[in-house]
Length: 177
Length: 429
Image 1 (cartoon, chains in turn cyan, yellow):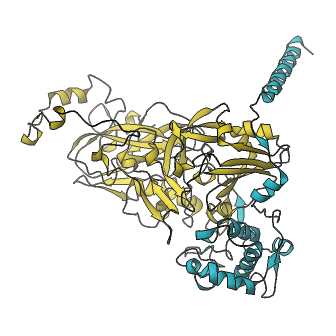
Image 2 (cartoon, rainbow over the protein chains, first blue to last red):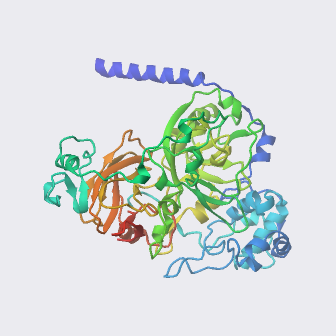
C-alpha cells in the first residue's frame, strides 16, 4: 500500500468518526412513542394486508351502510354522481373512449379501498365508521363489481387475498423507458 | 443553434429569430441600431388625460399601520381562481394568476392549493409528528421541538401532478395561463431536514419506502422512496419567511424538491418506514399515467422540464405594435434550467431567452425575451432544456409518447396566438 492511499484511508476513517460524533450531537428532542400510541395512529394498510384490523362484513351488510352513508355522493349501486363512480368501467382502459376508472376497473389492491374508506370516508364525517362497517361497505363495492360473491365475508384474512381485475395493469415508471 | 446567423430573419442586426424576436441583451445594450432608432423616433404627443396633476394623496397624510399588510386595493383582481368537487367547498384546487405576477417567487397568498378534504385549522400546540415503522426508536415530535433543530432554506417549485392537464384535450381550451398552468408556484421553504429526524429514529436497512400522512380529514397519504427522504426532503415550517400558510400545510408540510405536488404531504402528522409502497389511493387510482395500451405508469415522481410564457398571454391584450418583453417561467423537477428558447412564429425559428438570476435547481426560473411586434399575427412558444439535457416536448410529441388518456404530468409546449388586434388566444400549433 502506498503512503498516499494509506493517508486516504486514514482520512476517510476520520471523516466517518466525525460523522458519528455529529449524529450523536443531533438535538434528539423527540420522545419515545409507545406501541399503544402507534396502534391508535397507524391507520394505513399495505397491499399485503398488514394493518388490517379485526372485524368483518358481508356485501349485504355493506348495502345498508352504503344506503346510509355513501349513496348521496356516489349514486345507486356505485354508479357515481355527483362524485366518483365506484362500479363498472371494466374494459375501458384502452380504446378510443375516455377510460372509466372505478374500484372495479382500475384499483389494483382491495386493501387500498379499505384504507381509503376508513381514513377519508364518508366525506363529511371521516373516520366515523366502525371496522365492521368498513369491511362491509368494501365487500358491497367489490360485490357490485363482480369481484367477490354475494355471501363472501371480507375480513383481515380474505380481503388481502382478493385479486383485483387491474392488479397487473401498472408499470413502475423509469425515466427514458 | 437558435442564434446562428443562418436563422436570423429581418434586416436589423439585433433580430435573432423570426417575427421580431430581438437579442436577449437588447434591453441592456446601449448603442445598438434599435436603440439609436428608438432615440430618433418621434415621441407620442402628451394626451390631456395624461396631464401631470397633484393628486389628493400628495397633499394629505396616508393611512396608519396595520398588523399584517395587504396589497393595494387597486390590485384586488389579482387573485386565485378555483374549482371544487361537487358538494364541497374545500376539495379541489386554487390556481396562481401567473399572468399578473412577475419574478420567480410566488407570494404566499397566491400560492396554488390542492386539498382533498378542505383546509384543517390545526392547533400547533396539539399537533404531533410520529415517526415509526422500520426504525429502531419510534419518536414523537412537537412543533416546538422541531423549532430547536437546525433549519435550512430551499427555494423550490411545487407543481401539482395534474397541472397543465388541459393540454391533453383534443381542442385547445379557450383559457389562459392561470387555468392551464396555475397549479405551479415557487417559494422559499425553511425547515428541518427529514434525514436528521430519520437518523435519530434509526432507519432499518430493510426500509425502502416512507409513508407520509396528513392530519386533514382525508388523511392524505403517499409513499416516497427512502432515498429521496434521506436526500433533500425537508419538513417545512416556514414559507417565504413566515409560518407555512394553513392552506399549504400549517404547521408543517413535507417538501420533496422536484417531485409532483401531491407527494409534498401537508399537515404532516405521520412518517412510517416500510419495505414496499403502501399503495395508497392517490398513488394507485389517481396520480398514475394511463397509456394508450391501458397500462398505467406508476410512481412518476419528478415533474419533467417545462416552461410557459406568462406575458403576453390570454387576457393581456397588446396595445399596438412596438417593443414588448416576452416573459415566462421555466422549471424542471430533475434539476436546473439551462436554456429557454422562444419562438414568435410557431416554432419555425427560435431564439435564446435571458435567464434571470438566480437560476436554481428545482425552482421556477424567470426568462425574458425582447420582441418587436409588427402588429401582425404571431404565434408565441417557449421551450425549456434542463441540465440533464431533457428538452420540453411539443404537444404532438408528448401525446405521441404517452397518449391523451391521462391528466397527469402535462409538460408540453404551450402556444399563444396573437391576433392583429393584439388579442392573445390559446391554440395548438
